[in-house]
Length: 173
Image (cartoon, rainbow, N blue to C red; front, side, top):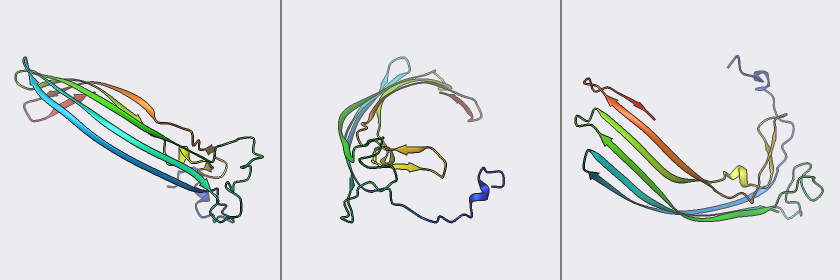
């Protein structure tokens, strides 16, 4: 793209590549879901369910070649002002409910919706890996934290759909 920032750097070749670390990341997940969808009087409908998620994640920086160095980035290691654990992870087991209530007018041209659910945001591999990364030279340096745990997220959604006679519709959430 001619207008892209740093476009003149596309043809540069790195003069050295330094391995930051060898990382062993192991994740296992298991889940199940049950739901009920029920029509109710007065054009109402309820949909409810529960999901069970079990996730285990372990991360560890390892001495892959036996030279005694785990983190290989300049400034990393025992003398670094920023100390990061070289191993960590989490175990997570939670039941996550969801609820939806819908109402349709008699002609089914108008649908009103309300939904509430619980979900989980899991740390990415980069976020929990115990080493520093940078997207490009001069950018911020991100250091992973192996002690991060999943975040619980509550979702609430209101919406409506209005249909017209020509099979078109407008939806707003």
